Image 1 (cartoon, one colour):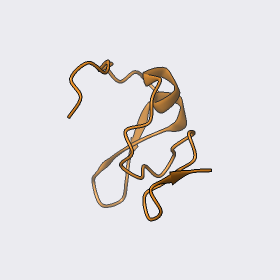
Image 2 (spheres, helix red, strand yellow):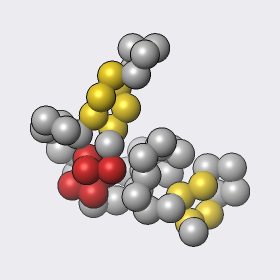
Image 3 (cartoon, helix red, strand yellow):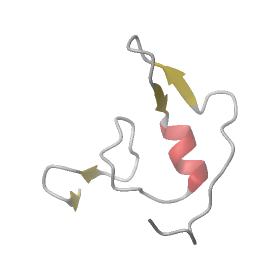
Length: 56
């Protein structure tokens, strides 16, 4: 894990709770954070595809 990347505190609208009880970060959060974590996030605004390990 790269500890030089910034960690931000979630604000209203940055996530929602899924029916399964998980926190799901929104595009708003990812854009505020400013980088892609390459985890295949559902709302990734950076176009990362975890299956192919590429950006579109």
